Amino acid sequence: MSGADNPTEPRPWHLVHVVRRRMPSRGLGLAVAGVLALLLAAFIIVWTTPLFRVERIEVSGTAVLDPAEVVALGQDAIGRSVLVADLDGIAVAVAALAPVKSVDVTRSWPDAVSVAVTEREPFIAVPSGDETFLMVDSEGVAFDETAEPPGSIWRVELADPGPDDLATVETLAVLLSLPADLADEVERVESPSPAGITLYLEDGRTLIWGDGSESEQKAEVADRLLASGYEHVDVSAPDAPTVS
Image (tube, rainbow, N blue to C red; front, side):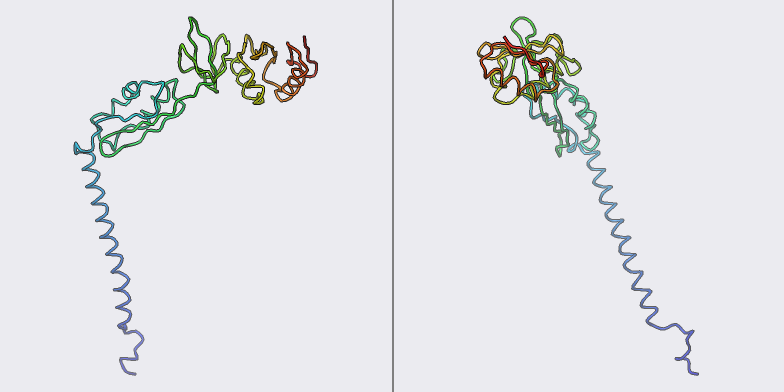
């Protein structure tokens, strides 16, 4: 039997096959090493060069807040690399300010941190003393004080407005549930207790609402009785309303 027919002798195509499988693996390793080297170089440049140090805090979206107050909360980032600026820490500090509903803190390359604030919107105005009013949003948070509240919001008398105050919570539930036509007629509101909410209408009529429960039924009963010409309507117990 000739040597060419010997099954144990390696064939040329086996050698070629081995070589072709190893070459891409070696090339891939070099490529990965090159990418890692570039990333490391970029990291060192960003970390060490003054070009990428935080020089300023950029603030947007403030109307109630003084932008300088927001900038002060990000001062620890000034002079440090943009890469290591504590964005979460700045966001937490800014979010704790009463007028802030939400905040988004990002890196603004090459040398700044951007703080985009969304402020709370006033929903009711609560008298707070000598011709001043607390601005309270729809979540019950008092976030500003002014002598001239917007004419588009309700004036509500509350002893201690806040998101944990039951009278505030019930009043907001009532106002948020009012049908649009009735809501437009409300001039002011008195809420001495969570179950003692009274709506004063623009034409002088009064509507005792009670608490925030059964609002849909109360609105239907109130609409029917007010349309009948009654001046004072009590729907705190909608199944047994009273009028005068």
